Each structure stands twice: as C-alpha cells, then as structure tokens.
Length: 303
Image (cartoon, rainbow, N blue to C red):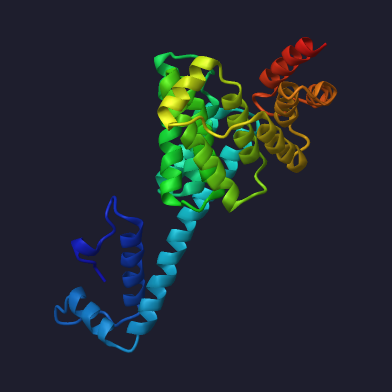
C-alpha cells in the first residue's frame, strides 16, 4: 500500500501526532489491498466504522500514555542527576540540569524550587554587584513560581522564605525590614504544612534573632513601617533553633545559631557548649565553613 503524502511520517512533528499516525498505519496494514483505485482515505473510513473502532481507541490511548510516561521519566532522571550535583554543591551544573527538567515538565513545584535553590546558593552575601542581584532575582522568581504552582508544598514555601532572606541582604535597610514580614509569613506557612522541616524552624529563629538585635535606628524604622515593632525576641529565637537542632542535630548551622541566641540571652555556658558542638561537626553544607567562622567569633567574645 502506498501512503498518501499527507499520511507519510513527517520530518518533525509532535510525538502524540506521530503515535497516532503509526497506530493508524499499523492497523490498516492487515486490510485487503485496495482495488479499482480505492483510496487509503476510504479504507481508513471503513476501518473506523468497523467493530475495531473501540480497540483502536484503546490502542491509541495506550501508546499516547507510553509517550507521556517516557517524557515524565526523562524529567525524573534529570531530577536525580541534578540532586546528585546539588549534594556536591555543584550549583551551576545542577541548575542547568533542573532547567532542562523544567523544559520537559513545566509548572512543577518540585523542579521550580530546586532551580530557586541553585540560584540562591550562588548568591554571595553582602555583595551588591549586578551579577549577584540577578542571581537573587532569579532565585526569588523561581521560588514564587513554585509556590504559585503548589501553595500547599511546604518545601516550596520554605524555599521562598529563604530566597526572600537572601535577597533582603542585598537591599536597603528600609526594604530589608519590609521584606522581613514576607520571610516570617512564608516560614510560618511552611511549618503549618510540615512542622518537621528543620530549616523552616531555623529561618523563623533567624528572623527573631535578627530583629531582636536591631540597633535603635533600625528599631525606629521598623516601628515606622509596621506601626509597632514586630514581636521578635531572643527567647523565641532560641526556642526555634532548639527545635531545628532536635530534628537535625547533625547540622552545623543549627548549633551555631542556637549558641549565638543563647549568648544574647546571657546563658554563657550553654552558648559555649552549642558553639563548640557546631565546630566539632564535619562541614557538609555549602555554608558550614561560614557558620563556623561566626561560631569562632562568638566564642572569642564569650571567653
């Protein structure tokens, strides 16, 4: 049987159209060769009107599902590859892999929050360079998209809180204070969805610690913006860090920030113990060495 030009395999087409074409051709091949100039279109019409129509519909759905499943599996493979690079703190390479996954499987909160994390991890603290600001902007954009796609995803809400925090340090004092409310909002939303997220407790602890230790000028500015000073305290900061430590005692940053909060409360011996604990743990996270630097500085001030 010679296929009409419009039914031959196109050089480029959507995968679903190709599956449809192959299925029709495969189903038609067993039919009798056309006689007296009968067209393939006529045979197709006859075929679809026969009792095989239901079987054809099922075959098409199965084949279409196979193509869709293959695409989803491909995105899953890319996620695994990106996660392996993320674990090694190879953020730029991981980001490229996740972006490919996003191209295959758009509007997926798990993919989008991973992209946000990779951009955020590349942001250099306190650097206001155009490149650094652009990384922070991209991180925030992808984190917002992740929450928009799945507002009930606790990790996506946590990612947005972290990205707000990273971006805030690159802004003016006024803008930083304005963004503080967004950080708290997203951290608390994350914890309502999953109270077992240690980093959400950490972010909420850091929010309390930073605001509780504002100088007089920043406290006045915060009161001007919010009407009254937010209910942040070192006591609440310590409670949040303690929860983070209880969930993940192997993380350097939780012990270090708990130690600093305890020092601010005047609980010197407890603070020293936590700071030393943080220093004794192996550095696994990307910012562990930076955290240990803060621990050494805090210890020096206590001893």
